[in-house]
Amino acid sequence: MSSILIKAATVVNEGKQSISDVFIKDGRIEKIGSSLNISAEKEINAEGKYLLPGCIDDQVHFREPGLTHKAEIFTESRAAVAGGITSYMEMPNTVPNTVTQELLEDKYKIASQRSLANYSFFMGATNDNIDEVLKTDPKNVCGIKVFMGSSTGNMLVDNGTVLEKIFSSAPILVATHCEDEETIRNNMAAFKEKYGDNITPEMHPLIRNAEACYKSSSFAVELAKKHNTRLHILHISTEKELSLFDNTVPLAEKRITAEACVHHLWFSDKDYAEKGNWIKWNPAVKAESDRDAILKAVLDGRIDVIATDHAPHTIEEKLKPYLQAPSGGPLVQHSLLAMLEFYHKGKITLEAIVEKMAHNPAICFNIEKRGYIREGYWADIVLADLNNKTEVKRETDLSKCGWSPFDGYTFNSSISHTIVSGNLVYENGEFNEISSGKRLSFER
Image 1 (tube, helix red, strand yellow):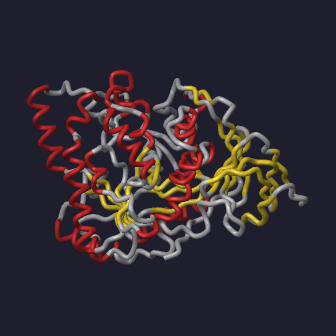
Image 2 (tube, rainbow, N blue to C red; image 1 turned 120 degrees about the vertical axis):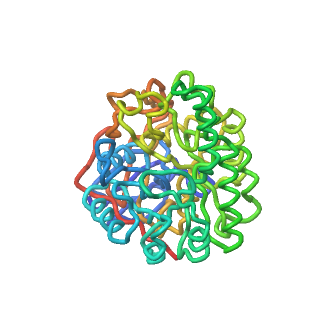
Image 3 (cartoon, one colour; image 1 turned 90 degrees about the vertical axis):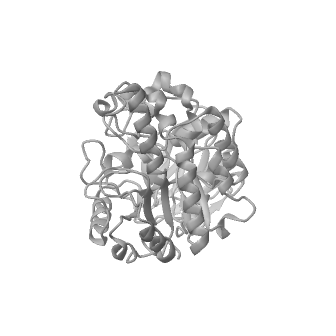
């Protein structure tokens, strides 16, 4: 389909709302205006609906290659577009870990054939692959991922000399998972001594506590300031860490930025009693005071981006006892709906949702011609109906793992259409699985 005309949508873009038509041709937004008299192969009546730039999720784990019993690039990108995410950046802790340029390109090849959304993949750092890391091309790779806390395989980077080299020499943005491994090990040993194998999910935020997060995050910020590194700290989970971030300069000028994830904005430690391992993530969901402070920091600009850390595990894996159950869960299908629920509750504006989930990821990562509804930009667009409810249940959960932490919840909004690089990929529950997303490029 080479042309689409969207009629009478309420466009939410760049801090304002307006009723407009949008004409898309050959993958790009060609014209935005009122009452456009243009013929198109497909016309969508968007009266009463909200047209948003597609969400750009800067942190997902789609599990391919090597862990495809949990998820695949095809299944998870399908869930993403159903949820209004048109572009994603995927993490390197697959099997094998993405720690060579050859393995990195292997993932791009898979995505070029199977991803319904636009894509980029992080290059993974280890204690012994600095030469490979420094080969990363800033123009067509989103960033370098450093696990300053435990991860799959050999991806914990705890060698001080290596960290100095990465932070001083990285050719592009460095994204970090910050939890201090020694603190966590000591906490776990203390809890095992006291409780043996009877540790429960409620203890998760006490083991992976605020001190572990702050110690690691503050160290990353110290390194970044020392070397003027372009640092992006992922999934902030504590109020204490918020003191590390600035809201006094424009985002495009920041050298240190931060991300909040939907689960840290939605859940608190009070939810473990009901949700248990279903909300077991690393970093842990923590106190209500942390949750509320993170939302405040999103609104005041200390936190720049909202993402998911989508990380599926099977139902069988999650049903294991706490010590055996893996951390992580699926979120891409419902992240925008969750934020729209915050809008319905008066906690955030539509303009702020668009800023944090589309505009700001594009700015943070210097993404070329995406993240906005602008003439000449790629047509990555989502139509949301704020008056049509979405009931979350396992029969309609699209992630391969077959569940959602929101199972049983009914959102007040729905996603009716998702357009990816000019292709109508999702329409009222139906998918066009012929077209693929495109590899993201970066203006660096």
